[in-house]
Image (tube, rainbow, N blue to C red):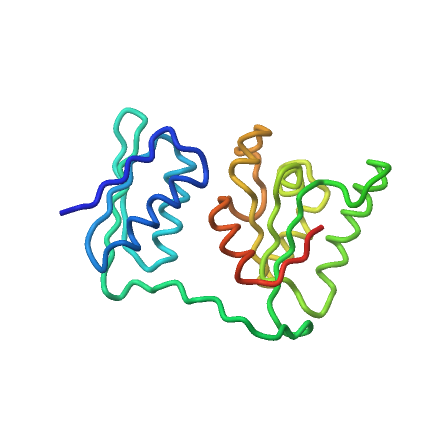
Length: 199
């Protein structure tokens, strides 16, 4: 019998968290998540696939039923180990929460941010991911001066992620020009696993 999770009306990252808890509560079987927006649908599907589950969805009158099959082969999230960090070789992520770097002149701050991102592509140890939050999502959307360099970083294996809630808030979801959309649950999980550089 399927375990049903009603996530309608819930804001990010609640639908992902609720669905993941339902998946974690069973060894094998089916979880059906019900959501009422595309962002929640896509975030749940991404989480399920990253967990090794098979899934598909059906749409009816603006609502989505996401069917997730958990099998014995689905991977379990490993526990985080406490260990000494090697600054040169350990993976890290960069968290960018604005379109300007530092406080003071906005014009100077935007110049510094652009210079930082341009410089990032040439350093020896690239980040695992660059996560864009709040006004930082302007850097990954149409009109940004750093789109080419972010695309170059992607070709070098750097994951470029933009917060879906932030894109929606600023009306930029349809203007995303590089990388992919993520959610707060995935961001929190990534920040817990990797050394984080906050810009």
